[in-house]
Length: 623
Image 1 (cartoon, helix red, strand yellow):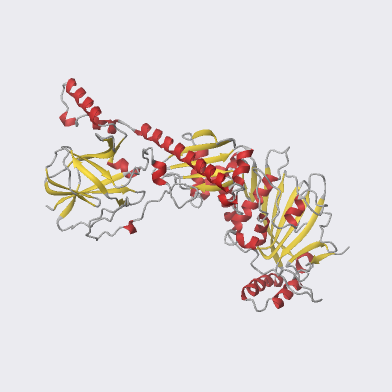
Image 2 (tube, one colour):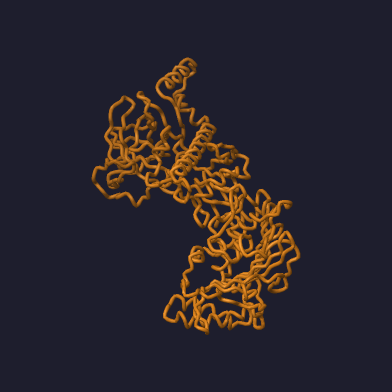
């Protein structure tokens, strides 16, 4: 039986071109996909008696002049060039590939795992782990929390090879050994006139089966159970280690913290002990993961175990912090990330980690996964209508938990500065304790305080109390999953020079540029803004302020306090402390004849039901 390359005939059937679907899926993010798919497969193959899986990525160069496993491909690339000579895209690929045969050495990336079962049943022709990975297309027998369900993840290593060639080597848990190469090329015509399928195999050429002993490239020799994958002519990327490290941190953060996996990339060891330093080192490129790490390791996070119908429970970790990005990592129970839930709240700055704990809930949502395993699509489920309802319910629960956590945080932050609004100003306080008590009681009768904040706090915090209808207010109706948009319109949506009155139906309005020749910016000597309930139990904003000088005309501009800018918003109604309606236009309130050191109070509502962190600017007559 001859050991060599063999490209089976297509028997006058399908012609395979350069744009193979599986490989194209991972183009543009080859290294990230490679790290994700490899570690996913290794986690799925963990030996039951072992505590954790170990994966190694090592790059080296090998001489191949006398190595038929690599050099033997050279003649097939020439035949392919002749067959596809009129196809520019294919010729570009083939010419780039042929450059490797002109070198003395070739780049080989070895990926090895340990504490796994290996690729079992390599002696069988079908329905084995070996054949599902090496020789099958669109086949996967994984279930529950296991990884791939479409069988295209095996294409990720080919996307990283300039020759589209990968070798597999295994020692399985029963002691079986196997070695075989696969070249995922294009159809071409052989010298005998037959046209190939495009995929070739290095092994026993008579039936394209594996060699029944282990082989290797370089000096590495496998001595224990597991699998080696050799990516031949590995893509020339100077930052390959950095990209793979960051991909592993992003996709397997939970698995690493649980000590389910340890990965070595070049000389860098990624495990539970080194995780903190690596997260710090790479945090600028993996900011969401940095947030998730803080949630999982911080003292201020809340851990919840939440049931979802009869599917079992998921575990949720939540924390509120000013710099958090408002996303939730959603992970399988094995610790592999599926997606970032990024439409949870438009105001509360939080971060969270959600782990699908039970096997049943894992299997249910796994049916909705895309081929890349990085999103959920209800139409992929066997029962799309039910899946849509359960998916919406899942995200609704996440929203509710974030809102509850946000309310708790706001309550915790209420301090003496806020409580000052229910006391007279210091200069007005008399020694009569009965007067103090009367003022406090009057305040309670008039307003129900929901949030108290100074102007500076409004600028620096986006933590807000949400109303009972927040879910409806934020739902993006165009999104089938009903998740929540967390973006606010950009300043580009406003025409600052427009003189038209802007009432409109939207929450955000066109700001109107002030005539700076007539007004100047005023610095109030004191100002407070907080949420209250008016006499009709409607939520409104109350602003109390004093000016540092007299002005005949005053203009108050109200804006959303964004993270790095302010955005105008339409004022729906406004009145003073006497209940008199004040004139307003767009995001501006006009007031007359204001005196220095006099306390003024106004109540205003905004055109939109969302709870915004607001700030104001006050302009007065030029001196």
